[in-house]
Image (tube, rainbow, N blue to C red; front, side, top):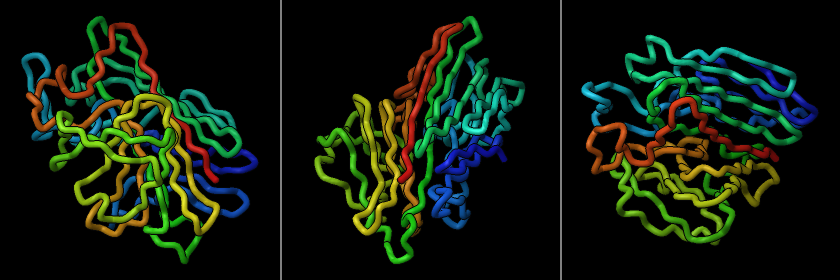
Length: 290
C-alpha cells in the first residue's frame, strides 16, 4: 500500500488497480472513503478503463473479432507500476500486455497521478496511444464516500448533493445497466438533491455536464463533507439499491455504458473516444475534504 501524507490528510493507494482506498483526517481520524464492505460493494474507488459501464452481453466487436469484457473494463483489476513517488504525490502506470490484449487488442499506456495539496487530493490520468492506428476507449473514476461522515447519529437521508453551477441538467436514464442516451430527461439541480436510497432504484443518476462542475456531498447536521470538481462530460451519482448502503459514489466519466440501441461495434459505442496515433488524452478530478 502506498501512502501520501501532509499536515492535514493521510491517503492510501493500492497499486492493484491504482485504487484510492483511504483518506483520513490527521486531526480527527475521520475516514472519508468507503471501506469496501463486500456485503454492499467490495471496492473503494476503481479506475474505469478502457470502458465505462457495461457492454451489451459483456462483449463488443472490433475489426473482424468479438471480444469479451466485463463491466468497467480491466484496469481496476491489474497491478500498476509505481513510476515516481514523493511524500505527497505518486504516479503509477499500466501498459498493454498479452493479458490485456486478449480482452482489448490495442496498445496503450495509462498513467495516473495522485497529488495531495492541503485538504485536497488531485487525480489525473493520461492515456497515450503508442500505436499507428486509432485507439477507441473510455475512462472514468468511481470514488465512494462514507455516508454518514463523522456523526454516528446522522442518517443517509440527512445528506444532500449540491451541484454547481446550479441549474437544470440533462439526465441520461438507465434501462437496466444500459444508457438510453436518446431520451435524456431534465433534472432540476437549482436546489440540493436530498439523498434517499430510492433515488437509486434505477441505478445511478447520470448527469450530462458541459463545463467545470463541482459536486458537494454534505449535511446540515455537521461540518464534514467532500466536494468533487471535474470537467468530465458525465457524472454518475450512485449507491447500490435495494441495499441500504452507507456510502455514495461521485463518479466523473469520460464515457457511458452501452446504449440500449448499441450495435456492438466498439468504434461506434456511445460516448467513445477515438485517440489518434501517438497522441495523449487527459482526464482529471479533484476532491476537497472538509
